[in-house]
Image (cartoon, rainbow, N blue to C red; front, side):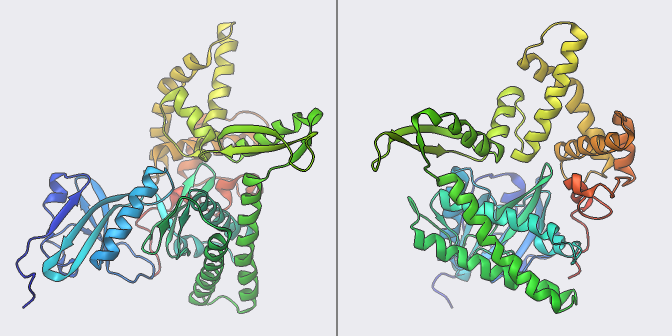
Amino acid sequence: MSASADVPPELRLRAPTPGLLALPWDRPLERWLVPDVALRDIAVGPSRHLVKFVEADGHLWAVKDMPPRVAVKEYDVLRRLEEMGLPAVRAAGLVLQPEFETAILLTRYLEGSWQYRRLFMRLPPDQPKHRARLLDAMAGLLVELHRHGVFWGDCSLANTLFSRDGQLLQAWLVDAETSEVHPSLSRGQRRHDLEILVENVAMGMLDMAERLEQPESLHHTLIAEAEQVQVRYETLWDLLHAAPVLDFTDRYRVEGTIRALNDLGFVVDELSLQPDSADPSRLRVHVAVGDRRYHARHLRDLTGLDVGEGQARILLGDLHAYRAQLCLEAGHDVDESTAARLWVIEVVTPTEQLAHAALGRAGTPIQAYCDLLEVRWLLSERAGHDVGTSRALAALARDGIPVDSAAKLAIAEIPTQPFAVLSEDDDDGD
């Protein structure tokens, strides 16, 4: 008998709600079974450890059985990533089980997210632009991690979730077992992590192609696409860390740099213009870049809405149009804060619920509202005039989104339906 027999489990719960406290933490995870535990059957990708999903207190949680040392390390890393505001699943608790010489890591389930397999199975193999959106999100995620000194160590499609952010895709780190947080990363560390990503992405895409019985002629294309992740990463990294040298009279070019960063969603924390060491008559530009939430931060300051960066871009456009209409009707200028308050009350709050219902409650209400705005714009473009919200809602409800203009609109890039319509109950084909 183990020396640790009959030793009670040690719980660290960040949300000690009744439902979580009532879970059978004194049992190994393999013995968590229905009907004793409210488990949800959600397919997961390849994993070194047993993973289950449980409903408690109206929320869905992921629980993973791991060796204690590994679990403690991952819990701490996930807490650090959360503190830095990085896109990763949120650690909710850690339970050490001495009696079984194991531990259970508890994380919040990322609502409205998909594994790459679910998206890949819906992507036409002859249209690489769809896969490019996934790979762009992966490259952006790795850049964000590296900028904050995070070495992932096992970055792959299987360890990543994707969610919709407006008409963009946001990639999220799921597995941090091999991750490390440093003050900064060396070029060698970044290059090594990037090599792991490229290799793992290629293997993941080839594995899915074989499972879907796609032709071998596609394999070379998939490998080439995986290698492009490195190009995407390096392009974004160079833009964020470039230090151009300008003549004193060319300072106007700095505005272009700032706008390019803002367009990508990055907040510029500090701008420095200093004499270049090689030529003191010229200026070297250093831009300190903060979080990738430029538009999201502005919208939150105006309205209190906490949304994704891609969603914020769409919503700010709608707010600006609403303010312009208010000014026209009032016959005078309406300040931005007043317009923002009225816009949330009169437009967003009621309409997002209608849009969410039109999509069968899939995704989130605010994402449904973003989808509605995009559908309304697309239908209006085709009609040559504003078709109104009611017609856009009807199109959203019956999946009547025109697909002949898919190149204009990201929502229509997945044939027959937007991402938001893919509910969590869809069959993964596993």
